[in-house]
Picture 1 (cartoon, rainbow, N blue to C red):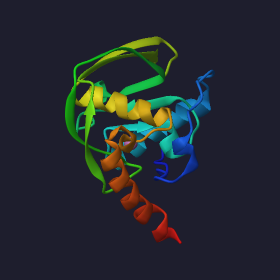
Picture 2 (cartoon, rainbow, N blue to C red):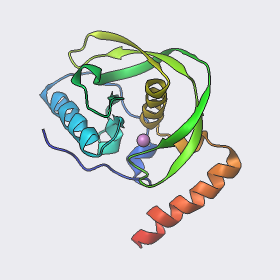
Picture 3 (cartoon, rainbow, N blue to C red):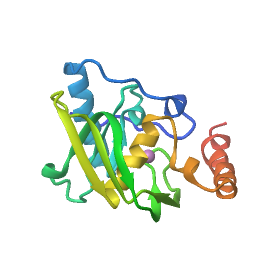
Length: 170
Ligand code: NI
């Protein structure tokens, strides 16, 4: 296992919809191991494949600070089965370091997908885990948490991000 570089805001792959996984080969298993390592090292509670530059539709998550292995989730080709409730909380993103905003998300979400062995998987997330599901699904669809903000807030944050991630690079 080796941590991979997390790509940041402005990298085109973060704005692209990821592709369904059709083959769970050794390369994909390596990607999953590396993503878990990268998430823990960051440290973060969730990571989508396109955040490490891979076009595959999968994410890893672990809502525990202790990296409890029994709480580690690998979800391949996730789809939303159910979603309900609403709660606002502060959210950040490993691809947008240093920026946090309050985002309204569903309080509970059930996802369906495949585990890393290719077996059908159905997982329910509440509160933080539901938030992680929605945040990572957004990544897999080419979205960021800032796309979930009100137009006025998005505008302000968008200008700050432009300054931080584009103008500083030139
Ligand atoms: Ni993120």
